[in-house]
Length: 150
Image 1 (cartoon, rainbow, N blue to C red):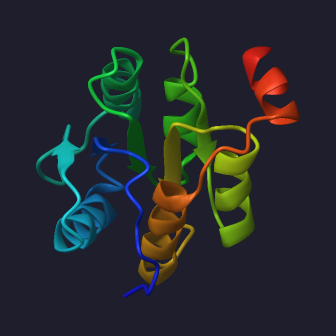
Image 2: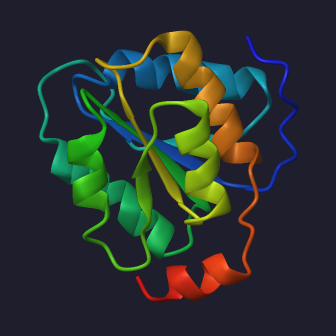
């Protein structure tokens, strides 16, 4: 899919979705497993209707407790998951929709969760955004001062 070589900035990655994002979650999970990246699937485990705040909170809490370094959340738009995850202290969940928004979410905001909208972006782009997110380092400097204010 992508010629980006992941440099393993993050050791532990977790993923969750709601029913709208379930299919894309499974595609992302398989993509990362093929790249030999260990991923912890927090559900759901089928496409039945679920409430996205429950899964966002579960994943964000795992990151807050340092059981995973970063997370991937997938729902219809990415927005509901992002809003829910950002209620948890220390979480910086970014809705990413193109290469630039993804890169900047890591470089400038030190985002620790990427939120994707399965109904808004194509599968191929989603996989590319995941690779970019996991491969981009936080720049620190003036951005660290700003992130600390969040």
